[in-house]
Length: 407
Image (cartoon, rainbow, N blue to C red; front, top):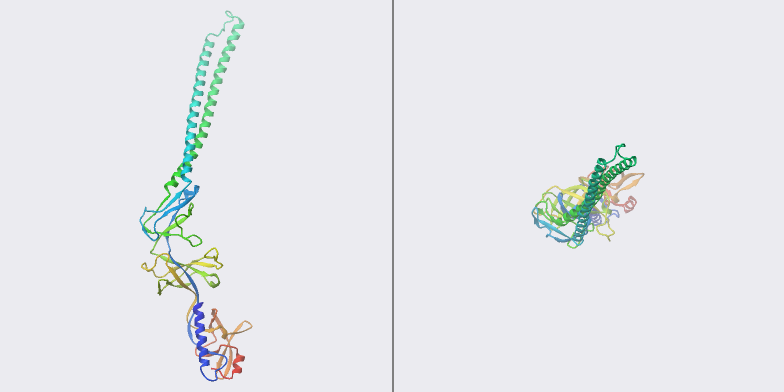
């Protein structure tokens, strides 16, 4: 929009200068219609970034402890696959691991004691079953059954004793069966607790092993920024899944630029963009909008201004100049027309939703309807109703009539 405003200002200054440069100049300036470029441009600023990159992420296994960044490799350094690029530190992780190991050792001791106790109870019951079986067999062998030899009372007593020994043997067998079921359930419970501690121990050991974050492949190390624009640094907290850095693919770059919310009218994807690198402002790169946020956000927490974040794909790459983080200034063209008729907005008058311009022909002023095209803050494209070379008024026709003479 600034380019269009400058063009309109130059046209108006030229017309006023022409009008004021001769004796008897009219009080209302005029403008000779000609064709030229018309632009509606939005200024933006930002930096270069890789279109594709491999994120360097805190391990998802690190969700159980508080981590801090203890060491980072130099930013923009070239790293090899497997190199340690970030080293995390944890104050509670070793304590958590030792605590779980102690709990596991205690449960292992409980399991050993329980197995020993259950084995002793099982051995005792087995011994009782064997003794009872022998007693039953003896009772069966020596039981009085012949009524002609033994008195009836003796026969009844021996039968009762045999039945007692039989019942007693079955009781001990049932008790051993119940003991085996109870022992299995108690051991399974202890083993389940032991497995839970083993899982936690494995997780903590994996976290300790993952405190050294390594490069997944060769590349240039670039540290990411937080939401407030501050880059991650040593001493900051780190959490599971946090993207601390990236290894960008430097063969394909793009620009991340910010557009002020109040200047974003007409902003959309695929609009053409021109960019200048801060340290080489004389060279212009072209591209187009590849994506933009739907909601404007402040760049810092205490800023009242809001910006739309926009991604710009580049038509030409220059690996020698284009590096991640390089600052750029951009111009986004909402409209960019060549060889069209555009007049200052103050030359237009409106009646019943129709637009008119005042055309000067000799000493006469003609009110002529026109059809409008694209419109900026200062200029309007005329698609029909004006020809190149005609002269139009840049003010009210009443003032022109009172002025007597016009250009």
